[in-house]
Length: 459
Ligand SMILES: NC(=O)c1ccc[n+]([C@@H]2O[C@H](COP(=O)([O-])OP(=O)(O)OC[C@H]3O[C@@H](n4cnc5c(N)ncnc54)[C@H](O)[C@@H]3O)[C@@H](O)[C@H]2O)c1
Image 1: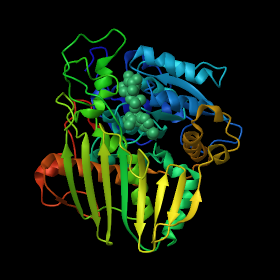
Image 2 (image 1 turned 90 degrees about the vertical axis):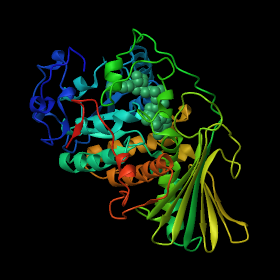
Image 3 (image 1 turned 135 degrees about the vertical axis):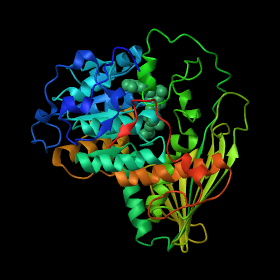
């Protein structure tokens, strides 16, 4: 832990909304933030009046967070009040994204905990690497902030369970960045499927194909001057800095990432589960490997996972990180098969087929129509902004989001189970009430993780 971070209980200081939530001592605030006012005075947690701005801190803005900053800044009645990143170069990207739509410059912060201390901030949007998602969300909820966290909502299954507890305890609004849940045509497609338009559903198939290169063999290197590597690592046990990790390549290391399966499958598999109307599976099988290159990449670049459900339904996932040949002419998508037809779901567009393969209905995506009041339609982020707006609306009204914490955990957890099955090399029997693995202690070891001492998430 950084020598300039005193071991002091963060939550005592902020008078946390959900007393008892947060993290162990490593999450204490930096000295500079000690004098912040008590969080009990924060606005967060109560429905906001129609004229009140929702103030958001966006955390982690190298790529996805930059897009989120733009989405939030473009919404009426929203102020991006802070941009936080441990890479000082990325902060500039986040500020520039906000400036495109706002005349007010957000605060720039290296340490997100200063944003959590700020009573003027209502909510956080988290787009850091996966190992931070649940621990940072839990800290933010403890500080009384509403949380929009990018998919996957957790680095492992246990974190998803803790996140559910934290959301309930804090009574704050939670949304995972599974934006398809807010796409109007996707909502319509799922409603049609669940109403029986293709009969009884039996199989859902999700896929993703890309053509990623090798990440090579990393070498130990000095930590760059622009990076606070200590705070980048946060809850993950310490490892020396290496030159092929930051940014983005952390996805392919189990220590920080969750592989292609959660990097992209969180979208498609969430849609599969939603369309079939199923909760936890009873059995999971996975196969694949790192086949294309010999390098430091640990997670599979080729993976097939199958989940069987007690209701007599199956979901499959296929990811190819290094061969982008399409399926159904799409690099990513979902097919749902039923007893009286099939459905192809492609983001905000869908096609329904009869049992002979004849198209019976085709609905094209019309992003501009998704939200006619959307002021940033030129950016291509329209549909993502509909999801972000759903979160802001829930913060205003105290209502529900389209991807609340239970759905977020179940869809993310299914994929964690797929990765666990792949890592232990055998099929897993699942407890349908909890999603935990039955009678396999070695597999359950991978349901959680070890934390850097002092940084364990606590609810
Ligand atoms: N919903 C979507 O469609 C979508 C799309 C892309 C990425 N994502 C998700 O967004 C997340 C980020 O992806 P990315 O491609 O932008 O990754 P990235 O590695 O390019 O960027 C992550 C950023 O987080 C910063 N960061 C790390 N620790 C931090 C901390 N403690 N405080 C503040 N900032 C910190 C890094 O410095 C970096 O700028 C991933 O979890 C990814 O799965 C979602």
